[in-house]
Amino acid sequence: MARQLEENGIKLRAPEPEDLDCMFRFENIVDLWDISNTTGPYSRFHLKQYIEQTQNDLFTDRQLRLMIENSDRQVVGIVDICNFDPLHSRAEVGIVIDEAQRRKGIGRQALFLLESHCFHYLGIHQLFAYVDTANKTLPQAIYYLRLSRVCTIKRLDAYRQRLSGCDNAPKNKFLVKHRILRITCPNSISTS
Image 1 (tube, one colour):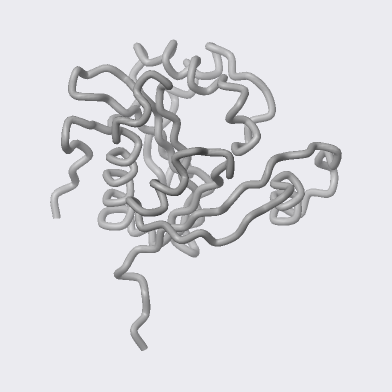
Image 2 (cartoon, rainbow, N blue to C red):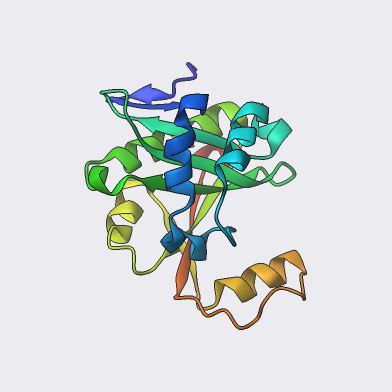
């Protein structure tokens, strides 16, 4: 099978040095921090180091960050794989699309490309994402991406604390409800 990261005018590619300002803008959207592991702003210096030092190899870096380009070769978003668990062949997915480019199918196409790359090339059997229940595109995403809603989490910080075994994390942070959505590779489902 061909390893294709481009289709229907959308391309996923590795970050380049000229993406620094774009990455800085996307990574510092405070409204997204509740559903990510971000606890503070990223500096340009830190992101520059990331771009220079990353192998952009999931198995080496334990994460894979890809820029989303439209047909005009403008960066319109970022999609990444993190919390990669090679033992269980699963990983978390995060995506952000520029506000002016939303509701055009760009995120959906980027996730289709990423899903195909993960399932058919990287050997990942399960992708999951934390999604804010206030996300207005959630019902459409569930339908188009064949997602299954696994659960709703009232306090995501407490849930992550329990998973990581960390008792020192702040306990007073209140978060809106979040859902875990899961995509499972059809080939990984046992028929016995």
